[in-house]
Image 1 (cartoon, rainbow over the protein chains, first blue to last red):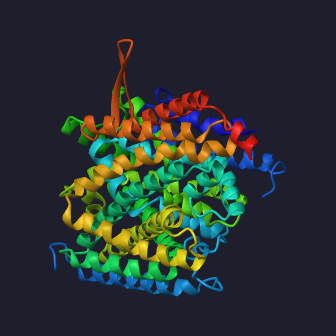
Image 2 (image 1 turned 135 degrees about the vertical axis):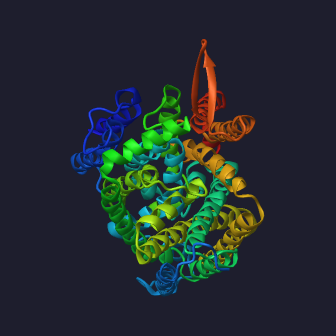
Image 3 (image 1 turned 120 degrees about the vertical axis):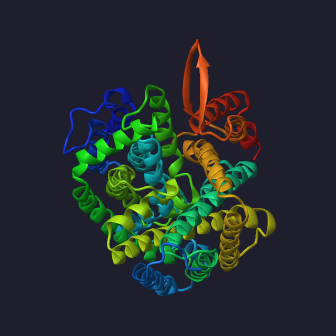
Length: 59
Length: 494
C-alpha cells in the first residue's frame, strides 16, 4: 500500500490540472480549494497506509 | 520607546501573555522531572519521552514559525498565487516524514544518537562526512533563528514599542530559560503558543471575511488589486508553474533535515508517535493555508501596509478590538520563541556531539556534554541577535534562502543509508560538496535568487536551485560510489 503515498505528489505537482478559477466552492477559486482539500485527503491516505502496514513493523 | 501604534490595552495583553510563558519556561525544568538535567538526552531531547500530543504541539510550534505567520501572507499579498507554494510544501512534507522519520528515530534511539550527524557517523564511520552534515545544520539554522527575531520585531513594533531594547530583553529571557530547562521549555510553551494561534486564525478566517463581504469578495478584491498593480495574480502565470512545483517539492525534502525539526523527531517516544504525527500535523497546514489568505483579505479591507511584513499586524489593528489584537500579537511573538529555542538547542546539540566530542574532548561525560550544549545555545542566540542588530535585515533573508538549499544537501547522507547499503561515504561527501558549493555558486551568480533557468534543447526551464543542486548531489554520490573501490579488503584485514 506504500504506493498510495505517491498520490499527494501527483495531485499537487501536476499544476496545469488545477491552475484555474472554476469550479468555485464557497467563493474559493478552484486553485485554492483544490489544494486545501488535499490536506485532509493526504492525511487520510497516510492513515490508510499506517493501518494497513502496522503488522509489518511494530515499534 | 513609545511608537506610533501605541495601544495601552493591546500592550497590556501582550505583556501578560509574555510574562505567563516566561514563568512556564523556567518551571518547565520540573515538568516530567528527570533524575538529572545534566545529561544531553534530558537537556537536549527532553528525555526522548514525548508522546503523540506533546510531539504534535512541539513540532507544530517549531515548524510553523512566527515568521511564517508574518511572511507567508506578506508574500501572498505581494505576488498572489505563487506565494501559496507553502501549502503544497507543507502537505507533501508529511508523506516524506511518514516514510523516513520512524526509521531514523529507531536508529537514533538504539544508538543513543542526538543529532543527524551522529547517525551519519555511526552508519559510515566517516568523520569528514559527519562534520559536513553538522556544519551544514548549524549554518542553515543560524539565519532561521535570526528570522524569528525579525518576526518578533514586527509584533513588538505592532504593539507600539520602538527601539531595540524590548527585542533584546525578550531574547535574553528566552536564552536564560532555554539554558536552564532545555527542550522542556519550548515543549511546554508550545501548548500555549499553538492554542493561541489556533484561536487567532479561526477568529480571523471566520470574522474578517464576514466583515469584508465573504470569500468571493476577498478573492475578487485581490484579483482587482493585482490587475491595478500590473503584477501578480490569483492564478499562476505559465512561467511560475515549474518554480511553484519545484519550490514545493524541494522545501518539503529540506524541511525535516533542519536540526530543529529533527530534534522534535528524536525527542519523541516511538516510531509510532512519529507516524501518528505525520497524520495529525497537517491540521497546522490547513491553518497555514488560511493564514496565507490574510494576504488577500488585506486587499478587501483596503489596508495600506507600510511594508509587506506589516500586512498581518495592520489587518488585525484595523479589524479587531485592541484586546484581541494584543492577543494576536502575543501569539505571534510567543510563536517566535518556541522555534528560536528549539533551533538553538538543535544547533547546540550538533556542536557538542559532532565537534566538541569528536575533536576537542572525546572523553566528555554526559554531564559535560549537557554543559557544553547549554553554553553553546546561549552563544548561538546571542550571535543571531547581533546579526539582527548590526547587519541589514536583507542579509538574514538571503542567508535563510541559502539555508534551505544547504540543508537539503544533507538529505542523501542522512536518509539513503536508512534504506540501502549501496552508497559509500566518499560518494556522499563528494555529492554533498558539489550540491553545497555548486548550488551556492549558482544562487549567488543569479543574484541570490532561489530560482535558476536552464536551457535544454531550446526550451528554458526555471526551477528551484535547491532541487537542482540535490539532483547533482545524488548523481555525483552515485558516480563516485561506483568508481571508488569497495571496502571489502579492509574488512578482510581485520
